[in-house]
Length: 485
Image (cartoon, rainbow, N blue to C red):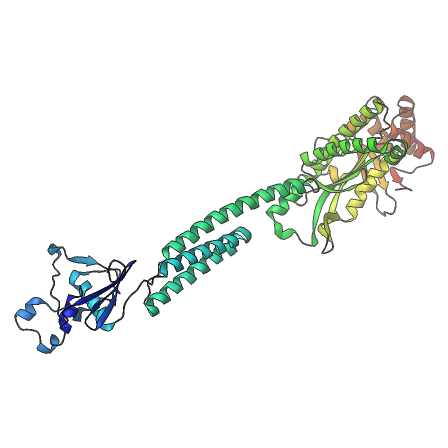
């Protein structure tokens, strides 16, 4: 390849300089050509330039001006494809092989060489190692978006550095190995980060669910943007429960035994709550507050609340009987169910906040739980809840004016929660209540007669006893004014 350069200078000798690692350069006359260790020259290919080519037939027929060739080094070659000397170059087009010699000669004469410095491999290795370490650290700790941005930034920086080295300095640096390595490391680190994050979220969901309602945890995992202070208005249903005589039982019994029994009781109650997809609002000692239709709206939240209350009552009644059978003075559970519009969300402060519902319907549900002790019932349900329920047999309690309220509330108790042997038949009780209600059917004397007859036959019916006492005290209708909470 260097022979035309030597011939043009009239040089007779070539000097090859080498070291232990291989050839360093070749001296041809006045020119020193740097090479790789195998004595090869890196070509800096240029765009196709037709003026460099002169057809042989034009020279033979003297169709070329003398000054077009005089003073130039002329290389003779063929462009015929059949002679197998057509080469593809990095510029994207094919050229006669002789042009590669011409471009090599041009580099020598202009002394503008492409070189791969001896330190290039070491630099590429350092870039590969540092890039992979840095990108791996980012992918393991940052979000997927930030990791991807870091990868693109590193690849862009790597490409810009190699381009600068090539165009400005004439250095050949290989960016492919570091780039491929960084992409692979990013993929592996991102995959591991995603797996570990999912694993951590599963662990947090499991652990946090021991403190907060599972559906609340699932909702926060799916909608982390809602983990902020504030609330929104929403119609929800509420179930409040309380254990009768718990304080007295704690005073009279071994606290360790009572706490163990209470834990079993609470665990079973929560299983029922979560079975009906309710959200635990809070524990207050032995009391449980549950809400439905938050954080995830439930169209059938009234039905869910009532079904949950009935199942909780069935369990609590059976649990109390089991404990009483072994000598533990375990009281009955009272339950109140109500619904209405409340403010639901996270409340508290910047350091600690709690997800809960705020509004009058919550207080009303708590009051309905409390009035059971005055009515002799176990479960009180408002008309607002029953409006969204089907297939539930109830007994009318009457219109309750709770303490501190100005408007009465129509209240019922599910028949399933009453002692069938001790209570009057529903038809007889309903007939007596019909005469007690205000309106065209009201007949206070008739209501009194019917209730007194039922009281003689069913002296342990709590609601019959209640209305008999009210009528004997000259009650004017079914309105029951609660003096106590």
